Structure formats: structure tokens, C-alpha cells
Image (cartoon, rainbow, N blue to C red; front, side, top):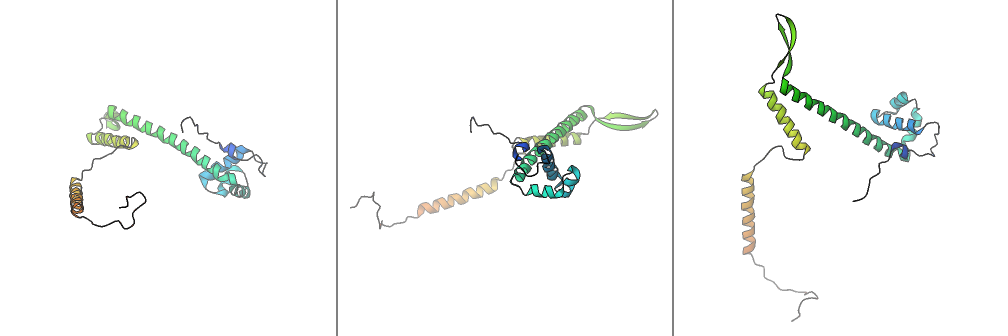
Length: 186
């Protein structure tokens, strides 16, 4: 695969130019495909896009609809991935800031109500660290725990040794009834 560059087709490339319904632009059809993908309903898509449900139903039976849906699914998946990545970054930044400066707490005192910073508890700090560590390990495809089962492995090793010893003790005697073409005929 070296030197090959995968070209990603856009939904505009998938929708044929010679379609029967020239009333709708490729952009409108792409909007319909995306809306249908998100809602899963022809009627809801018709309401949102202004394209009749019967037209949407006809398009869904065309050769290009499935491929267009795959492209939309991939685009939506990338959008969601970007949003989740941003959310993760904000959560990590907020957690780091709270670990450094403490949580916000409302304090009622003689001067009235005020917001104060209270250090994060050791338990909460440990949980943040442990969860972050586990998620990092998962993201790197590394183990999140160590499991030792030396008892089962020792039992298995003993059983394999017994099988090997038993097989060495058996000798099968016999003679070749139909020698192959490469054997010496004596």
C-alpha cells in the first residue's frame, strides 16, 4: 500500500448528475440524506427539508443512497469525534485546574455569601488520577491491571509434562504397506 493515497468521495460525487429529479440540487439532496440519517424518518426529513416524503422514499431505493448514507455516517462520526475530543480536553483542563486551585464552594459568613476555593479531597484526587491513568492506558492499548494466575499455569504445565512423558513411552511398530515413489524398494 505504499505510495497509495485513499481518495475520499464526497456526497456530491455520489449523487448522479442524470437523476430524474432535477428540481433538487445536489446540495439539497445531500441535506436530505444527512437529515434522514440523523432522524431515521422520511416524514421528519420531509418536514425539515421541504422535500416530499414520496421523493425521499424514491431516493432511498436508488443505487447511490446507501453509499451516500455511508459518507454521511462517516462525516457525522468525525464531527462527533471532534466534539468528544474537545469535551475531553475541557474536562481534563478543568480537573487539572481544580486539583491545583481547589473546588468552588459557597460560604455564608458575617460578610454575606461568597465563593471560596476549597482543596480537593485526597479521595477525589486519587479517583481523578486513577481514572485518567486507566483511560490513557486503554487509549494506548496497554493493560489497565495485572492479573496473575500462576496456580492455573502450574497445573497446565504439569499436565503437559505428563502427556509428553506418556507419549514418549509408547512406541508404535508397523511396516509400510504401500511405499511411495521416492522410497527404496529392497
